[in-house]
Image (tube, rainbow, N blue to C red; front, side, top):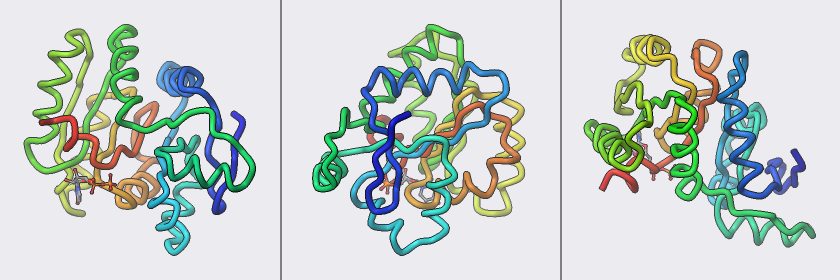
Length: 196
Ligand code: UDP
């Protein structure tokens, strides 16, 4: 994919449909285990002083530009961003396609009860969507092995990780090799916005 690099972070510069197709391709492919992250202006600044987070971003398969701050930063380096690819807008489109294609979704993160609420809402909106597991995000380090077992047993095509920035990127960086998922995406506060 074409990318533009700002503050050392390579974002994809593609339209929404192309981004969606790429995400679906990760999920459809039998052998992938991809990681995708969103970056807004705040995250880009955090990454400057956080080498592990920065490295986790560089190890991702794709970084999606989220919000107008990133678009402004790109303009400054002489590039116009094709699209604002934020998670809030993309997520319902992803769910719609996953439902059509029978792909499996796992929701990991947020306070106890929030992912369940989100599951309930998604089921109403996309009745055929296969939500194969939910797990809150306060399991601590001792619960990590159990959470990974639970995820792997559910065999999700997409794992949404809502532990906040940069916790979710660091968690995925550390555990991605043990996760049997086609695509894992860090989604920040998405469950909190969507559950109400
Ligand atoms: N969270 C979590 N486990 C933690 C810390 C935070 O699951 O140990 C969740 C929190 O409940 C919230 C999300 O991570 O749902 C972070 O949301 P926030 O909007 O702060 O994150 P951002 O979008 O700014 O990364």
